[in-house]
Image (cartoon, rainbow over all chains, first blue to last red; front, side, top):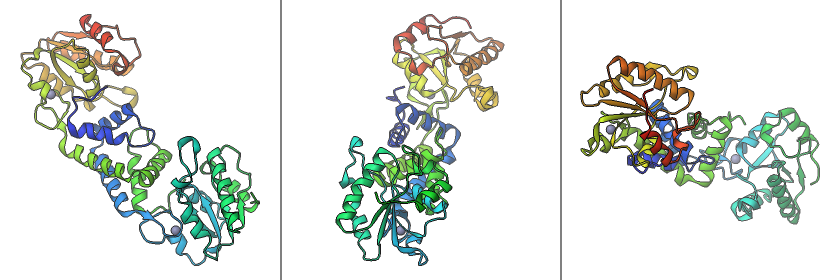
Length: 201
Length: 201
Ligand SMILES: [Zn+2]
Ligand SMILES: [Zn+2]
């Protein structure tokens, strides 16, 4: 299993693949062999899209999601209700809420959540940018749509204190969502119901 | 979970990550978010090492392993016993045999194995190159060291017929290796024993 004798470009590829979350030494090796032997075109595509994504993507100045431009399309849309700000963990969660077709406000994407067990504390999440965004004088309700997991609830509690200390109105998605599950797994109808039924946290 | 609304470089990255074996839509998305948010340097490294590996690596003209040069170091080593040729599925398997310090011959790396269930037939494996290599007039024993899995055994049986039809002497690693397991998981001592105890297949 060791690749002490592997040519340098192969050893470097295996090492780099291990930086992917959830990929250990053995699966990195298998991935490398697979790409080189059976899908060099895929390897080239992946190589280029990694370089390209890192070069071109930045964070939306308003909502923090990944974007190629200064401010993303959703934030620029004048038909959105700028008085509501929905806080989600990831762009995937935002997509799920969009798919429910029951929310017209704007978003803030945390790009993570508090996780004391994994050593992710308040300084690792851009709460400062969220706070700045939420206190623009237009937002009058912050809807917390973090996941209903331990980490998501911890984050929601933390944000509730933070927002209330600034006099902001805070709500949380209703627990129509089964406790312990993640937003991405829930059907759009349930999310629509949970949005309508949002409550004070 | 859909990324219909994702910026193009992000959507392209998620698509490309799905070409990795064992990576589905959700883990591709998680990998992309992780790299972009927490490890852009890792993303750059992975991008460059993929491009570099595909550009620089080729197959050794003698043993078929990945190499940066025409013929790899092992094949060029004059202290190796050129009368023995050990056939393995992957470079990782070759490394395991090297680690047993009980084999001085040369190798041929199949870069795969027969798998009727996965649609991998004799035409997908470079048996033609193995045959050419094994009939160089110097090799007088072909040691089959494919895995002791269904696919590895199928490959060994197929190769036995092929080699015998050419009048080559064929042996198989002894079954010191527990049936159903893969070489990579076995300790070097067991492999040394299995090599000494090799038998007619
Ligand atoms: Zn935005
Ligand atoms: Zn070689």
